[in-house]
Image (cartoon, rainbow, N blue to C red; front, side, top):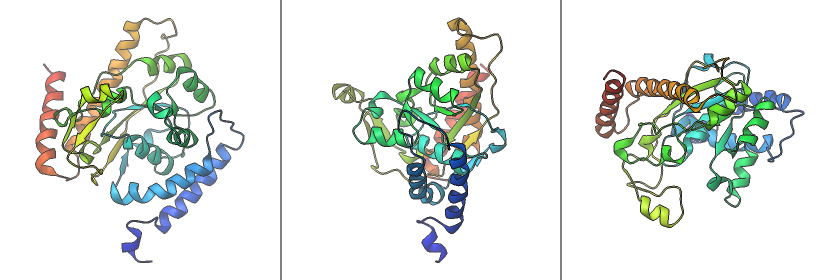
Length: 296
């Protein structure tokens, strides 16, 4: 088969790698019982279909793989883009480009979890409702959880607000404290440019009882190059426990938020060319703004 055919379809190299990865994962999940219907065969089928999109359409690069150890994490990062493709790409990255491979258990909003068919499909491929009891169950069974603490607000940004973090919620950190599970900070660069010009019709979305309603110049995500950065793990301080005050929790969440902000600044500075006439002014403004906030 010619290289041109490989551009859109699964390459022999990725075909072989997926087979190897899932051989390892079948050993990992041999005795695992999941109450939400997690299906490793369905995960493999999904990755085989999505891998050409990951490699050739979004040209994903992953940095910081050496920071990932063979233990559970609460993986925490910025939510970016107008549809949750960032979660899908991070999940593929941790399965295919990180060792040891793992299937990330992404926390999703109730709105998505309750959708017919799609809710069941996301559960079978690893995503579950972001409920405290669910998270604790997964951590107890050695699973790593993917959390976007900005929530829906993270993917409900108008163009001028791209890469500006919304305040992180604190629930994920309470769970991390309870289970003494380290935080692994990540950031995704490039997903905002999939939809470079966006306006959110918040009033209409509220009337329709939707979490967001983006109005974009393009209906289909553009092939913006995606970079995923994995930072060094952040340990949970020994003195924190279930009785710790909101102030103590907030201080540590703020530290994680600032860590992700710094990673965003670095990522924007090393962004690959794509719609530069739009991207460069936005990136320059955001980097300047982040630095001014850090050094007022």
